[in-house]
Image (tube, rainbow, N blue to C red):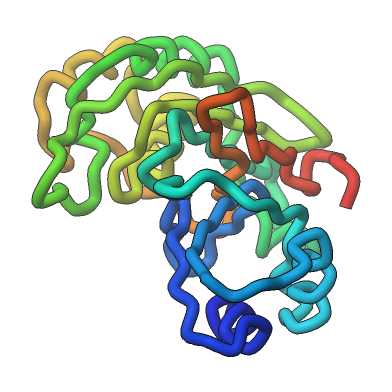
Length: 232
């Protein structure tokens, strides 16, 4: 949809590069895309032009001209994801599309204890849905926190890069620790095992948000998901 809108505006085929790929059902409030064009356009009005051409479930927050060679994907230094968990006995019709309902009681301290074992540089093959053909499975998680907010549990993870379904598998594994199905002290063994069968279930897509991407020069596209009370 975005490529089609850009192609109409610039009257030429436009191919975009995204900072992160998301599975069907995953949300993005801090996605970044880049593209090249030789056509002249008043770029200070590109955001307005795009938002008038895009469907209601897709919007552009800002647009700017960048240096030649910039890639939203390959120039990224760090990515942030947020996962929303609804921890209560009954489901919510209003929040069903935006969070993962867990009806079992959750021990937040157990989840937090388990999460600390994932911060650092490790081989995250055990948390990878599809092993990449190139690039390996070693990643560095720089921050991982779980806290109550707005009646939900908010998991925030920051890393230099992520593997296929890595955040959702981390979320599912930590939830199993919180619901007593898994020992929080066993995370190190899961990492060392390098076997997807050793980790927990893959949490569903609707709770996940690509929240931000950081680049050289200090720019960070981070935006808090509105489900946690941020401005809509």
